[in-house]
Image (cartoon, rainbow, N blue to C red; front, side, top):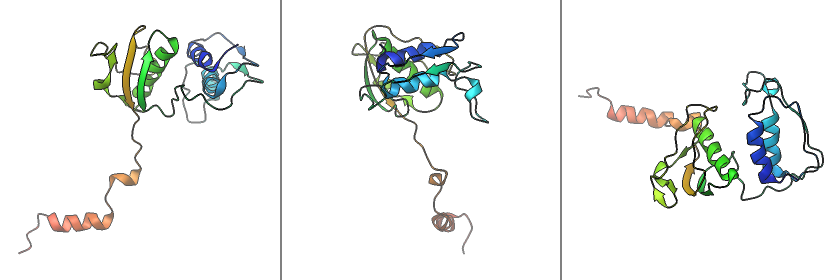
Length: 184
């Protein structure tokens, strides 16, 4: 049986597979995160929306069967890529923890947040591990496989287009007050 955590780990491996055509995970307690990650990992370029590029380089999707898979309430301790901000204490001996750090690096490469690098400690030692910045989604980072990694991750601030400007009346008032024109 495949648990939610195991499904997330399995999905990371599935992303790399280029030969599998059909996957049956019926009657497994995949959970919300595990089920979502498996579905996304099975997607190929043929399922990308018009005008979008596929997340993975697989040309054709894997046919996926997920009947009777428990996908109820998400486990609170599992990583949610849609909301990555937070403090992390990760057992790097655990493949799931390695996957979370790898996912955070990918999110950072996409501009969806960043590590607070001054907060990173491996086995309570600052500077014992430096989280690399990835150049792209297909980069495979070198991350620790043992020890306890502590870090803070900040999500990218979403700003509305209108947030970057002052109200027009205030802008005009400031311009009139501080303009270089001689008023004598």
